[in-house]
Length: 261
Image 1 (cartoon, one colour):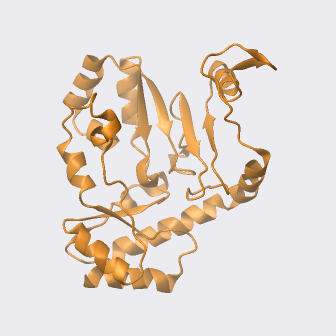
Image 2 (image 1 turned 180 degrees about the vertical axis):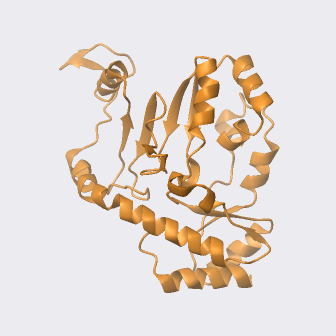
């Protein structure tokens, strides 16, 4: 969605102005950050708030500025599969706004202004428990080295996957703006590649098979949405194994399997 939204200067501005948007949610998909300078420039012109979805981008940065620190708020997931994951569900929202931070603290705990006094509607019990926070505190110092390993694995894939049927993502062009949460290739005959990898006991996933605007829950409100590029990509993408514990010989095995399919 972010890539399509940024594709055309004329269409971007026309869309922003005509839709009377109040906020834009920018997703740093697969651990690769969106060009936030461009997003913020367009949104500032139209007084639109920017919210960053950083669930897959822990530790990514652009010119030293961390993911989540560009918009009005940055949202992180600590699901176990994330670059920084707890041992169960969890998440966090960061912001530089004192007022927004106070509201978020209230919303996460029943909407309380003080104990047993509800002042904000739609509050809930959504606190990160102490055990998960403790695990995250231990793992946080390791995030930088884990991300570096992910980048090295991604770089190895980009260098050595030579199959003409497979297109690798331009990881090198991102630099520190990518933390390789997923390594997602494009393949026109995806099912053939997928079955080939599965037959060799190589885990692979489709992230994501159904675009948001085609999800059943949204069909009533998105019937007029036309996103041909998104739909085409959704039929081609396939995620290869990419995590810090992956051994060099396992990486080589994946590369050979992809090249011989």
